[in-house]
Length: 81
Image 1 (cartoon, rainbow, N blue to C red):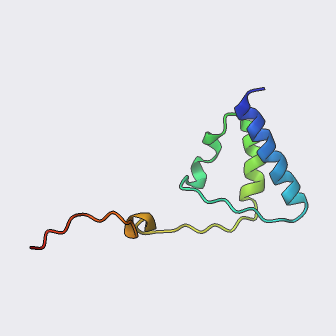
Image 2: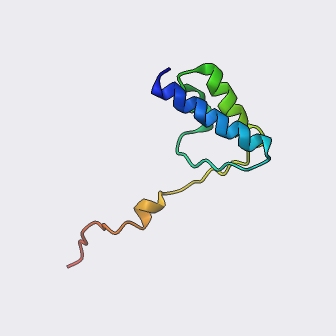
Image 3: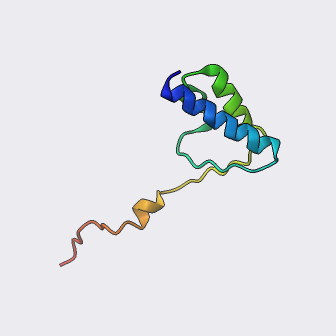
């Protein structure tokens, strides 16, 4: 079994146990939900994982400029003389 597949199985097992106990899971990502399935090499495990993540999910889609850019310590040089 490849390292990647083993990792997917572990993720699936953690999500299964959390779901069975009624516990929440928070996922923060820049990847759109429509692209999740393609990120997993095994379609069967992808279905199991995504079923636990997406079913009954509350999604927050943030808009606007990245706050890292807005609050960055590195500022462009001033052109004022």
